[in-house]
Every structure is written in C-alpha cells, then in structure tokens.
Image (cartoon, rainbow, N blue to C red):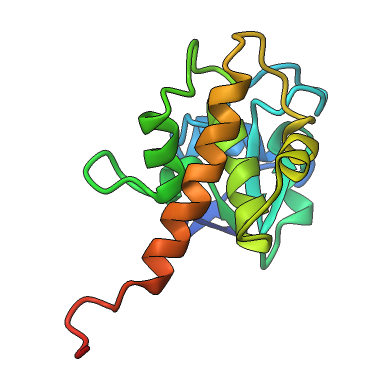
Length: 164
C-alpha cells in the first residue's frame, strides 16, 4: 500500500510498486485523459506532470512516485472553468482526433510553468516527443502561444476580492 498524490488529493493505492502510473490513473482512479498509446514511452499520449516535469506515465513505475505530486489533465481545470492551456487548445481548435492532445497539453503546461514566453523552436523541441498524425501542428503551436498569453494575463490579474 502506498499513498499517491494526484491532482492535489491523496489516494491509497494497493498495487505492485512496478505498476506503471498510467494503469493506476486509468484503472484505479478513473482518470482517463492520459491515453495508452505505445506502452513504451515513445508516443507521449500518456504524458502527465510529476513535480513540474512532463513524464510518460506508461513507463513510470509507482515506486518512483512516493512523496511526489502527479498532475493529470483533469487536475488543470474543468469544463466550466478550463485552465489556460485547455482554453487555448479549444479556442485554436488544436485537436482533431483527440488521442494525443491530452499529452500535448500536459507537456506544453510543464513547459509554460518553466518558461512563460517560449519561442516556436522551444515549443517544437518540447512537443517533439509527442506523436500526432492529425496534422494540427500549427494550431497546437498557436495554442501554446495563446496559453502563454492567457497565463500571463491571469498572473497579472488581481486575486478575487483583493483591493486594487
């Protein structure tokens, strides 16, 4: 038994320490945004954020996650209140089939948390690990730039209820 912190909540997990995080997220916690793609850490469909870093959950065993914070796409926002990255991907219509998009958003989110104003080359370099065959690459690039602007605007906005 181990405690796994996912999207800000502790979960008691009874699984073999070698179990890939992806299986626990999907099967035990019913968080289905991270997708099973290749199972080898080569496509990025399963990408989540662990302590601020994008990782492929299909090859990340539970034993490496004790005491770490895991964030999935479900932990970023909701349908009613999407996170800037989610909103930007919707506004730019960056998804086509949708299979890779959760992983793309999570990898982009991790990048934007470290680099508020990435260049096209930095975005492409970061997203290179995630495979997409739909052909919306330019929309994805625009969505990441839009998310960066939305995040900067949100950071510059006063907190609700604060005096200006």
